[in-house]
Structure formats: structure tokens, C-alpha cells
Image 1 (cartoon, helix red, strand yellow):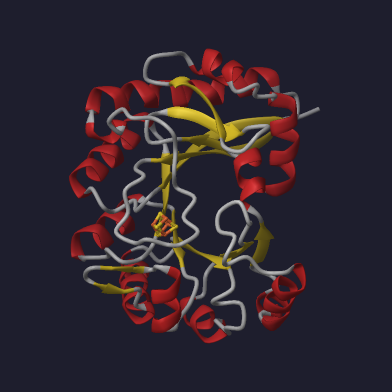
Image 2: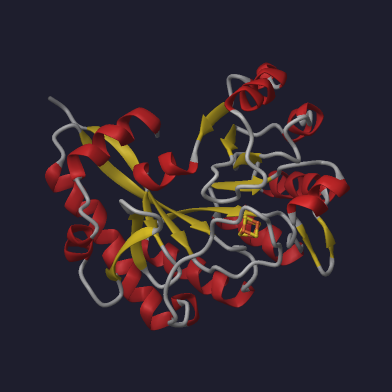
Length: 292
Ligand code: SF4
């Protein structure tokens, strides 16, 4: 049986810090140490272990061969610490990682548009609403202003001009405030390769939660985009992807509320750390074959 080559995706939440204050924000981890993106030494040690994950999984799998690794940078807000982000990009090149990122779309500027166009294979933007009042109500606003869809559109057009093959992805969390909205025009203009639509889970915000039926209506309203929509919940994410927190630890949904953590990967091996979160490679690979 021949092994199918696949790209292994490792998600690293580089920081918890964000300029927005979304009511349902799930970017919160336990621990008091300094986030490791501020230490080149720790980031390099982390990257060594990230590369080891690919080799470890390849040894265990009969069906899949992970020929590439894509490091997906997540936040907090990924573009908040520009200098540290540049260091991460340079180090990723040294390790041969492909790069992608998720951003709230508020910090695009000339420098990071160029950084994205030159170095990232895909960029995901969180867009819940096109309406100023709705974005304010959700908390998608900073001291400098409210989420601005036309600025995002302009920035993405610039990125595409420099890097026509870059994949654009949109993430939307459907909640009480945006559940009746129609995002079709924006999606038609931005032409993403994928539109991930999440139903807000009560664990992240009780007050903004919606019914299954309301979620289905939201999907129905956007059925023209069926071919690019993938509807998932955040539990799917934490269980189907390898997730690393800002302190460099693997994390996974625990049995009770909250996450299980491994020791930081900059001070322990990937093999040990995976054992500490009861990672089951067979289960992971099977799920991976279905969703990636
Ligand atoms: S933009 Fe993302 S990280 Fe920032 S507050 Fe909102 S959900 Fe949290």
C-alpha cells in the first residue's frame, strides 16, 4: 500500500494578546510565564520539536506520509508583535516550514502586507459582521476603531496583487448578534478558497449563544457558497489539529472544562509532550484524512 503524501498542519497560538475584545474570545490559556515569542532561543527550541512531530507521525502511519509541515500562526492577534513575527517567519524559512496565519484583519499595513505576500501560503481573516454596530456589540473594535470590511478588502487585493496564488480564508463565528446577517456580497468580492463557519459554543459565551435552527438558517442564507463553506465547531478544531499555546505547550480539550497541557516543547521532546496529552496518533491520522 502506498503512503499518501499530506501536509501536516501545526497551529501555534503565538500570543494571547489582542487589540479586540470579542465577547466569546476563546484565546485564553492557563499559566503565568512570559509568552515564548519574545525569546528567540525558546522559539528555535520549539521549532526543532515541531519538525520532530512530522517524523514521529511518519514512523507510526501506514497510510499517510507527511511530506510537508505548515505552521499556522494564530492568536490573540497574530500581527500585534511585528518584530517577533518577522523573527518567526525567518526561522520558519530556516526549518522549511510553510506558513499561514489567522488574523482579525485590523492591523494590515504596507510592511505586513509584503510579509504575508512573500512568505505565507494562506491567510485567514475573522469576519463576523459587516455592520459597525454589530461589530461593536461583539467587541470587534479597538481604541483605534471598529472592524472595517472595506479596509480588509483593500489589503487582501494588495496581497493578491503581489502573490496571486495565495489562499484566502474567512472564518465566521455565528452568534446572537450576526445570526440574521447576509455576508454574501463581501464573500463574493473577497473570493476566499474556504469559508469556515462556526456555531458559537455556550462554553465561550452563554449570552450570545444561538439555536441549531438559527445556525442552519445562516448556512441556508449563504448556500450559494456551499462549495467553499465548511461548518465546524471549535471542539472539532482542538481535537483534529495539533495545537500549541503561547507558552509552547500542546493543549487539548480536557475531560472537565478547560484544557490539558503538556510540558513546554522548548524544554521537552515532542515525543514526551504528546504522551502527556494522551495523544493517539492513529485516531489523529484517521480524523486528519477526513477533514484536511
Ligand atoms: S479577535 Fe480573536 S483573539 Fe481577538 S478578542 Fe476576538 S476572538 Fe479573541
